[in-house]
Length: 486
Image 1 (cartoon, rainbow, N blue to C red):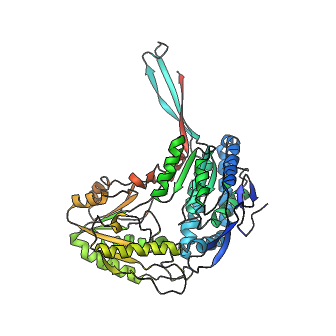
Image 2 (cartoon, rainbow, N blue to C red):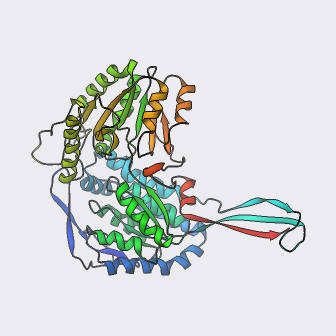
Image 3 (tube, rainbow, N blue to C red):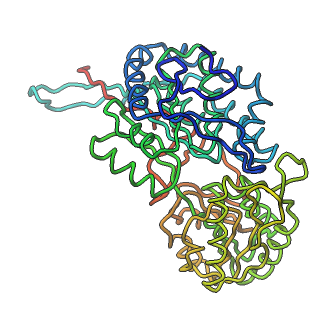
């Protein structure tokens, strides 16, 4: 049975099934209107999904890589053929602007399926070793082969800020490696993930290889993590939730891939191109309305450029149009919910109390409906303020001055997080020197752009493991050594 347009059924073991827990509404953050109803799975249904993935793992893992790749390629074609309605759904669920919903959500989702439809080598010869005397007391040459094997059943728990690119970035490499998956989408925007499952079913994915279970109850995610049928958990979300998942995984030695919080430092040196720095840092205000862990939200500006940078960032933020994401003139859409808007606003008020200067923003934009937050710039911050240390996840930038290079590096590294940092400098040698000393999984030099074949992941409390490109295949695989006498 096809799920159809209502989005009200779970996808378990290759079938669309009625949820035990009924349904809950999915709300458009821009209009506050109900756009659909999502299924609420019971724990038993989550366990059934995990059992179905376990049963399907053996046959799928033995399927030739070329056949698995062909399924992913067909899924990409199906999604691309439904591009506009899928982008409209993503926009309705997340409040993303039209360009973001099309290019960065559905567009990147398609690109990720196509990327992992490319077959990669799964084994490598290891240089032979000459043993003077082995365990049997005989000298000889030992040959070896390193083989990448699938992990098994993977629970994928996805974030609300991008219901296409994030799930595709987990599902596609996991399936390419021969794993099976149980996907638990974010409760705010699960409908797009069901459309993805529909495309995969249409592409010929065997029953049980992909399962989707949604719900607002904490127990849905807990059951998907704790199930004895699950071998690995891939999670994108907050550090606090990631830590709880890690504790559960540790008890049974489940593999983990964690992309957690960020508080990216952007070091702007006196010799930087200020216009370039402002444009890059300004994406915090606009891209996903600041709801992105890679955003350069903590700006460290050298004294010689501090005043100019603050002035230009304030002007930049003031020019951004906040409003209906379906309006082509809109640059900043809403945040995901009323509760999250209140959270972001509470941080701005906290910044005031801590002594930060609210240079621009800080007040709710006038609107009859929708969860909008004005782009907000906090200046004269210090690195011990909570607005400089905690992830706000909204269109809020904090600016901290520093004097010399060593101080800037020390401030950048004085954080619990370490996902992506940024360096702006006209001195390329210094930029690379500083980048190598930053304790972050990635560093952008004079850019906020990314290379989608480069490894992605964080230091410290920003996560565990690396994915993207070939690194995702490593993340969803185990390396096996096969050794023989030469």
